Image (cartoon, rainbow, N blue to C red; front, top):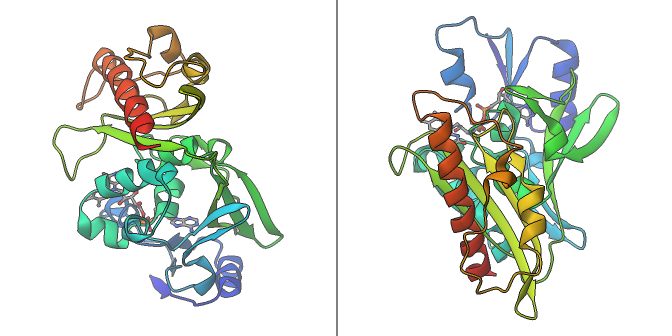
Length: 278
Ligand SMILES: Cc1cc2nc3c(=O)[nH]c(=O)nc-3n(C[C@H](O)[C@H](O)[C@H](O)COP(=O)(O)OP(=O)(O)OC[C@H]3O[C@@H](n4cnc5c(N)ncnc54)[C@H](O)[C@@H]3O)c2cc1C
């Protein structure tokens, strides 16, 4: 297996053009466990040394998280409360060792239904930036994730950055994860909520659920019903009708009915948490 660690994005693209069967890798925390005893790719392209893919930056249009940014950088970076869900998710990814090498972009590109980074990014209405031989294109995360292990990435393209648009003033956010233990655990279900309020009432809400459908989903019915509620409304907020968009499965981690019940409770906790932290 060949290994290349270029330091320029143009070199990554050239290598991908020369070696169509090459695989891009960042922290390798999804790639290597999935490879197991399988046949390794002809060439592995490590993108973590590419300067253009590094850093978290903020400008008038919002934030940019480079594709080489690791979970521990998200945790350590000063970000407003609307990012609290993403930071909490970052702390829930595996362990400190995993957070020190695993990237947000790798979490997205792996397209697992249980990827903890996806609901917070949906609740931020994040977009991905994809760079390939014909240039750069952008699309919402919801469009990028097309199914279990399926993304909109084309041959020769890489995910180069994640863009988060400017968020409503005073927006708070929260993330709730249910696992069979506290750390180093794959989510049974998880929820991210971003909420903003004015005049004592909720004026905007985004609630996204992961591990309860092939791709994490926002709950538009619930989001709509939250608008106008007083900030001290006790709940419960989530009704079965809000969850019909989901299709939880039964597996070793839990039954479909358990997942559905847990989602409703986690949504309510995340909504209350987001209102507290706004
Ligand atoms: C012990 C352990 C615990 C874990 N716990 C959790 C957890 O709690 N929650 C969770 O969500 N995940 C968990 N994971 C999975 C993993 O750590 C995360 O998904 C991590 O964010 C993946 O990032 P990475 O940089 O290591 O990805 P990599 O393994 O490097 O790549 C993942 C996939 O994305 C592709 N890829 C990576 N970067 C790019 C790019 N820029 N452009 C195009 N394709 C790219 C790779 O080809 C590969 O297919 C765990 C993994 C381990 C080993």
